[in-house]
Image 1 (cartoon, rainbow, N blue to C red):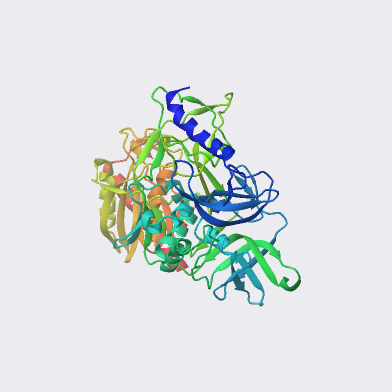
Image 2: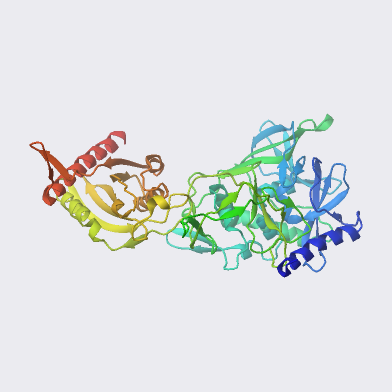
Length: 564
């Protein structure tokens, strides 16, 4: 045994010893190391503090699986706990043959409590039917969407310890502290960012989130049945699955699992920017010797083990549950600041190797831990939209752009044209697999030149990219574009997409920016006269480029006026 393996082995055996020597039916519930396979979750409620040997006290929740007695699991697993579900390791399977319901919330729900102490909320539909949902299930989907938000809900400083809100002239910044344990991987989808924006910035949502801890602290019972004060929900749309009651309760639909929320009410006047110190872009680089290293295959399905602490430095085991989603107003603008980049050579997995088995567990990773940290979450769909907001850097106009500079200034002297300004911008490094396609001879990022021209008082942006600096031969036409609003943000988004796409113009993305654009080809550097190829003189080349841009801009403005 290696010495550095000893702490992990100790941590793993602590759970085994505890499970062996603690009574199977101890109150408030025997500890559960993993979910039983193919056993239906019948109930989840009852929060209590529990100390696990020398580990600090953690909140636990009682669970009842069909065919099993009362057990308890860490409360941060609440995002996994939907009544009627079955489990296979870390994967959750919703209840089969459940009925679906959709409702528009016309008035605030009324809280009720059953004789067993379970807290519910009752909604009334337009038809007069009653739809009820457990308060824990509502809070799971409203707030506790991943392990880290669930952990935050039971911390004494709550959202105040998660992130701080700062204001600038044009954006609201949600800033995570330097020692943030909130994984930046939870900030990579639009759905997650809009949801967290609402939780942090909406006063009503923030108070509702804080009420979870408040109700727990005010409870006199050792085991607290979950309750909270929900935010205002009138105007929301809710979808869920469950079933109608029988007899006198035949008009009551019980939602066991909420599947979708839509909040059309929340809005924010400025762009919302998340600033996380560990939010970095991982970029590929070429191996020094031209060969990528070969590594053993990793464990594709590490076993969940709730009795161990994860090991610090291991890659997160991220599991996303597609059973729930939430949406907000389409006009909500969100993004993430890039705070660094890491370059690494992508290894090749050896297909003949046997992967070493690993464990996966929730909680803070420590140096004495074992296995990977489980990061389970709902409302994390696969999205292709780039939400990172890496600042585009202005650079000095170089000799490479001297001809383009002269062209746009001459264009400004044409009839009905005026030259406004010109600047050079360094493009961000591409994300994904296009780093090789955009590698330059100097090793520095590609530059673009952006000029603002007005034609008949309409602002027109002209963009020229320095493709001659790319190692591999590459051509790209000049882009002429008219934005309906916020040209500065539009140019930044357009250039990021251009870099990510391997230096190409994405016209579908341009249309999504409420803009119209047109390719403008470069003039030929050679001409044919009397059957002979001749080099075009510098002056003729300038004039030809001016004429091409002039024609394209006139045509684009005509198109805009025709469709407006």
